[in-house]
Each structure stands twice: as structure tokens, then as C-alpha cells.
Image (cartoon, rainbow over all chains, first blue to last red; front, top):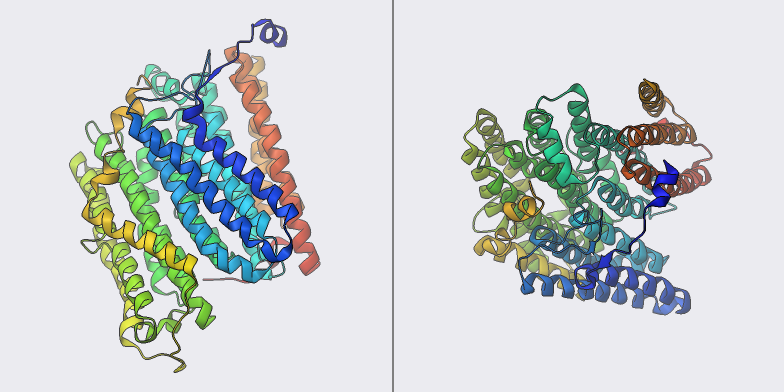
Amino acid sequence: MIASLLAVDFTAPTVDYHALAPEIVLAAGLCIVLLVDLFVDERQRWITSTLAGFTLLGALIPVVTLAVIGDDTRYPLSGESLTGRYVVDEYALILKALFLLAGYVVVLMSADEIERGRYYQGEYYVLLLTSILGMVMMASSRDLISIFVALEFLSIPAYMLAAWNKRNSKGNEAGMKYYLLGVFASAIMLYGMSLLYGVTGTTLLSEIGPAITASGEFSGVHALAVAFIVVGFAFKVSAVPFHQWAPDVYEGAPTPITAFLSVASKAAGFVALTTLVFVAFPRADDVYQPFIFVLAAASMTIGNLLALRQTNIVRMFAYSSISQGGFILMPLTVAGVDGAGESALKAVVVYLVVYAATNLGAFAVIIAVARKTRSGEISSYGGLFSYAPALGVLMTIFLASLAGIPPLGGWFAKFGAFKAVLDAGTGWGYAIAIIAAINTVIAAAYYITVMREIWMKPVPDGDATPIRTPSSIQAALVITCGATIVLGVLPDLVGRFGDLADLTGALGR
Amino acid sequence: MLINNFLLLGAVLFCIGVYGVIARKNAVMVLMSIELILNSVNINLLAFSMLHGNADGNTFALYIIAVAAAEVGVGLAMVLLIYRNRKSIALDELSEMKG
């Protein structure tokens, strides 16, 4: 076996540096941040945050040029047995842009918060950039091995970031819970991947799809493989019943990291799941459909019901993001129905982008308000509008977008998700649409509770001094609020990137 | 057939690992159980690689070994952190946050 492997002549792969440029810029940038952190003294550590921000914007440049140049699919690494394992197409580009921009907003949100904590600034940004590099890789991965490597690349730094408050016992608890459940989930997912490799004989997603279809009947091993992989990712995207870690981790982690985990890390899980569902399991919908249906319905319902009784705003947002996750999963239940795949993929991509903008914005407001109130309770938002009108209005916009009120981004995202499942015209589709419609109403209840505090309640302790918002958080608010409104008015900006034919066609489905 | 024995070994290791993660209260024991699951995956991959006669499975197993080392490094650091703060690594005591 080994001898036969060595006998093969090695030919170096050809590298398309333009297509690989975002990853290269990020990798170079994080090395620079690490080195700079060694040589500047304590008072000038803010420079690391600036460098991290520039790295992310720098990595965005090749993403934009690639998107402008054309719509043909590129293979950054090509050569025998390498072509197709790592792909840059429009689906990958829009998600890379999403991860880089979300990362940039998180850097803006962290700058002040982490500087006040006064420790390990350099390492913080290095870990953040590493995690974003993993996400950028995830968007391009079209192979079981590269999906696994990208997943660990983005998760391992995230475990450390979750435990960032080293001396705080809540921080320790958050890190340990996130670590153990994350590692356990990826181990389960790996077992599923090993079985999938066993029944298909390849790790390339575009070959797994036809191999599953060619075998005709599903064996138990096929079903087990698909089920284990879906369960593994259900942990990552904190879908009910695999969600228990999320609220505790979100509460214990520093707030910018909570925003990062609830948006970027979750989106990366969805990206991998979507790629697998569309490329690797195109005809396996008998197996994954019931699973995803149950996950989506349970996430929406249980996430919402638990969010209703929270008094801490971060925990409320944890459960709210679990229920939003249910809405993102919803279109995937009909992914295998003929003719519905196209709008399902589009719905998932648009929802991810809109949800990222809105949720990051809401967390930016939470960070700004917590600077004054030093409290995470929802009641501390009482009378916010009277002393910080801008923050009050912005929070209202973000909450309204999450609740799905037109003309904001969240409305269009929900519209797309409903349209996808109704277009499919199957019993599963109608059932999930009804459950989602009921949940939209329940969700509005707790978003409106917060709005009522902001607009109608008196200031709890009578302290109505205005909030001084640092300029970096102002910038984060402008970006997220702009994106939330623009995507509601001009949704086609991102909608056109979720092209199913591009994703699967180029891979010879 | 030889491959069945390997797959059976993999499945047994997987089950022991899952049981360990669920039942053990000691953080280090849970880490070891996770290692058992990862190694069951490696055994599966190598057996399948032999069955199919291609190198994908071998490559995958190499990546898993490398990544598992990184994971355990982070995990042990976190266990050490908790031990310093609490003088205990029992996981059931880590339950400050509820709801």
C-alpha cells in the first residue's frame, strides 16, 4: 500500500494566487499582528486592533475583485486529485465577504472593551483572525477533509476566546462547556464522515453525491452517516435539542465574542451544512429531511418559548439566535424537492447575511449600553430613548428587523424562507411554514418587550446622563444599521449570489 | 472478512467513547473519551482506505491525528485554568449559570 503510494510521481499543483489571495492576506496579517504585539509596549497595544481591522479590509479587496472579474468558478489549487476540493465561486465569495465584514465589525466592537480589560490584546486579535481564516476556508471547502480542517480552524480559537475572562468563574465555565460540546460534536461528525467515505469511497463532495445516487437504495450505513453528520453540525449551529451550551457560553464570554459566536461561528456551521446538503446529499433528502424538519421546528419553538422568560438581555439574545437558526434551517427541509433547491439556497444565503448584520448591530448597542448601566438585565433598558435617543432608535430598528417587520432586512429574509418552503408545495413544506408563522408571532412578543422598556418605561435608577459611545462602536453601528436597512430595500444585492446552478453545476452533479 | 473486524473495533471504541463523555464527571476522563472516539474514526478511515485502495482515508486520518493533538492541547490548558481557580476539575460543579 505505502509502496504503491510512493511509486506515484509527484507533480506540484498549480496555484491560482488571485483566487487564494483572501486567505493569504489573512494568514500574513495574523502573523504580523502576532509579531507587532511582541515589540510594542503596553500603552500602544491598540495598534494591534487597528492592524487586525486593516487585515480584514485588505482581505476583502481580492474578494471584491474576484466578484467583479467574473462568474466563472475558480479552482485555487488544481492538479491531479486536487481540482474541485477547494473552490471559489459566487456562493463562496458572498460568504467570504460576510465573514470578513462580520469580523471587521467584531474588531470594531472589541477595540474599546478589550483595551479596558487591559490584557492579552495581541493574542485576542490573533485568535480572532485565525478563527475568521477558518471561516473563509469553510466557504470554499468542497471536500470532507477540508470541511473538517476548516471547522477545527475556526472552532479551536473560538474555544479560547470564549474563556477569555480567565479569572472569572463564569468565563471558565463558558469556555469549558463550549470546548467539550464542540469537540464531542466534531468527533460525532467525524464518525459520520468516516462512514460516508466508507460507502462512497471518496471524500470529494461532488463525487459523493453521484455515488450515493448510483447505489440506488439507501443502506442503513448511508442513513447513519448522514444522520451523524447532521447531528454534528446541529451542535455547531446550536439547534434544539443540541443547544444547551449556547446560553451559558454567550453569557460567560466577553460580549464582542458572544456577538462573534452567535453570528460568524454559527453562519460557518450553516455554510458547511448547506454545502453538504446541496452538493453531497442531493438525493438523500429522505434521510436528512425529517432530521432537519425536527431540528428547525424544535429550534424555532423551544428557542422562542425559552426566550420569553429571560430577564438577562444576552441570554434572551442567545435563545433568540437559536430560534433564528430554526428559520435558517427551514428552507433546507425542501432542498431536495425538484425545483425548490434554487430558492432554498437563495433563502439560506440571504438570511445568513441579513441575520449577521442585524444581530451584530444589536450586540453593538448592548455593549454601548452596558458601558453605562453595568448590567445585563432587560429592565436596565428602561427609558433608554430619553437619555440616549440614537441608541434607542437603533436598537428598535435591529429588534424590528429580527422580528421581521418591513421594510427592514429581516422582513425580506423571512419572506424568502417562507417563499422557498411554500414553493416546494410538499406536505413537509406546508407544515414547517405553519410552525414558522406561529413562531414569528411569539418572537415578536419578546422583541417588543425590549422596545417597550426603551420607549415607555422610566429610567430605573433616575440616572439620565447621556451615554458616551466610543467612535469604533459608532462605526460598527453605522455599518450594521446601514446593511440592515439597505438589504431590506434592495435585497437583490445579495440574492443574486445564491445561485444553485453555480454551486452544483460546476461540480458536475 | 478482515475489514469487518476493523469496523467492529471502531464501532466498539466509538460506543465506549460516547459512554465515557456522557457518564464521566472528571474533565480529564472526558477528554480521554473524546480521544477514543477520534481514534475509532481513524481505525474506520484506515480500514475503508484499505477496502477502496485509495489514499483519501489515510490522508484524512493524518489530519485527524494532527488536529486532535491541537484540540487536546487547548482542552488541557482549559482544565488547568479551571483547576487553578477552583481546585477541582469535576464537571458537575461547573453549573453556575442556569435558565
